[in-house]
Image (cartoon, rainbow, N blue to C red; front, top):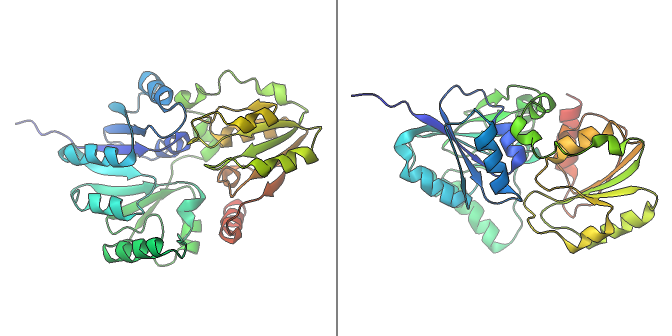
Length: 311
């Protein structure tokens, strides 16, 4: 009887997670699930199928939980699962039925380096209590079923999360910007952009979260002579009305990290409006001005960003 070699399976929630997932040194046969939760997910999946040779199988599935049901149904095919976050009660309940599959998390962004602090609502408090009972911890990578974590900066993680001794920490294989520029399937999304267009321009760019705030107009009005760009979060699928305030709207499926890296080398002035954006953590030091107008606490974000950029 021929022994079937088991595979790894990856769940990808947005384009930047694909970049990070493909930076994991994994010589196994691999399957890829793209979640249909971001703009142009079907096109992104098609590009991977037709261009990338990394995967045995690539498919698009509507939600994370449907992807987990698929893995549960096919659990005998896999011995490793790679996912951006292991945090949550429902996910942990799924993992109870997948004891033979080794779970690994990979870099999600700045969230991979921080302690999760829930708000004080009764529901959130109840969630935290239940999650702790079934074996969860208040950080990504702390789930009882997680064997290890793949990060760009494991030493920074060890500095910030000191009570995670049993988890293996692995460094992602290549420098972030070297790796992202090597991926032909990602290049398909920005191959038609002429970045020379931004040469010597004064630029103001708004990097949104899941919600686009109308009060960004205040910043735009203060810089009337700047070329204004809206870069929606990849999970925003609809074109927002507010786009009329901007000179340009960038395809939300293009990683902000690559767009910022390209224009920051060319423009004469760059102003970035954001709310604790992960893309600025990866961005190499450049001369730019920023407005972080998040409603959330910025201490953890600023601390993590400082540790990474000054390592």
